[in-house]
Image (cartoon, rainbow, N blue to C red; front, side, top):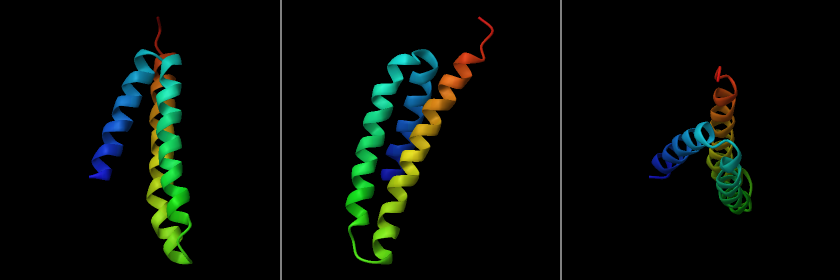
Length: 80
């Protein structure tokens, strides 16, 4: 379920970044902040379990960041 939510969020952010590049920064930061909270909360688990729990959240935050920047980059490459 979480995987599907992250995929949909990445798609929405990429489309939003392509259509409205400046207005896409706020939702992107909000998504990164919420995923960062999950990573920090998971990282408080002891030992290797903390790394295992926090890794999906940090990877998802990185994917959200990449999709937003890819949408803005594609918008900048348009000839008009």
